[in-house]
Image (tube, rainbow, N blue to C red; front, side, top):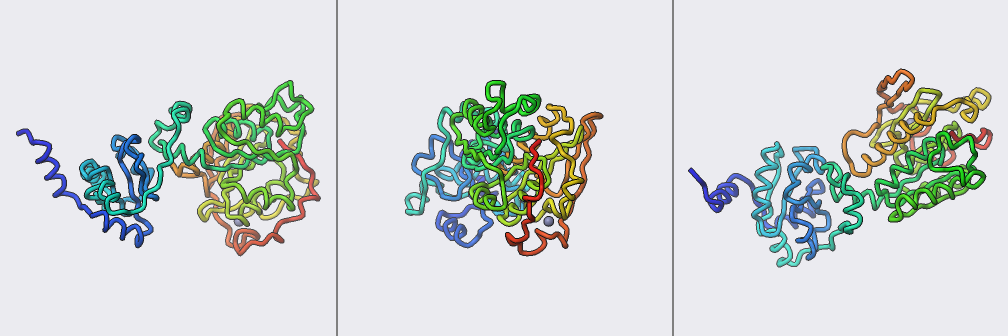
Length: 388
Ligand SMILES: [Zn+2]
């Protein structure tokens, strides 16, 4: 027997929990784990949105709810314009196993009439929507994820073999502020792997070449360059301005310097390294996970540290690892999937074999086990300065 929509809606509302806008306002003040999902369409948002609300059009609610709140025991409040779509959405999200989900009766209309706070929604321009459409279509990214990417600040240490593919993908994907630090000049022998640079820039600073290439690729992002060597004097000031640090170097002193500064500042360190046909990628210092020194407490003596300037390397291997680092950075920004924190992905590309090693935080780590201080930074100047 056919059911009319009004009967279906009434039946739906009986099967779910509703709260008033006043109750929502109170809960927002008292429950820090409450997530509000506004399921109106983009053209309905002009009157403003609840400041902390996640914006997901109704048609994408079921697809994206897990990436917004993976924990099905945590509270969700779904709101639309008047309370009808949110009732239907609440039923559907409950059926996905969410235990504490409510629909906001009266929706944003009632919220506005009650005089509660709204803010202007951050929306993408038509040009941004067109440019990033293929990643916006991913439910784990969406428009909100793209906005996060555009608002993010990522620093690439090194514009060499790893830094090149990494910076190219981050710029292409719309990381809004991309910093590059490197004090080297481009050499003809770099071009085999450092694909940010080309024949015309040989002899000029790599950061200038990087800026030129990246701004041609994406003029809608900010590129900041530092034509200087990363040292214990400048590392804190430079890193402070970024959300995520990516280690694209391949020399021990800089690796330890990056690690210690990231621990000191509480920033994730997306690490990549290559040795002949072996590559490694992991995320250090993220969400209680280990740091580089949990794995290797002290640097090897300079005479034992292999010089990667002389070691052979296949350019495409840099591409494999640099692209992995770019993926990890973007996952951290849009909070999708499982980051490579506490896991070291190791690949032998000669035989195309991938392995994963579990790595744990060391309770006696010289840097991350206790309150770190800048004096924990080692004397890096004793080491040679080699970039992959
Ligand atoms: Zn550690």
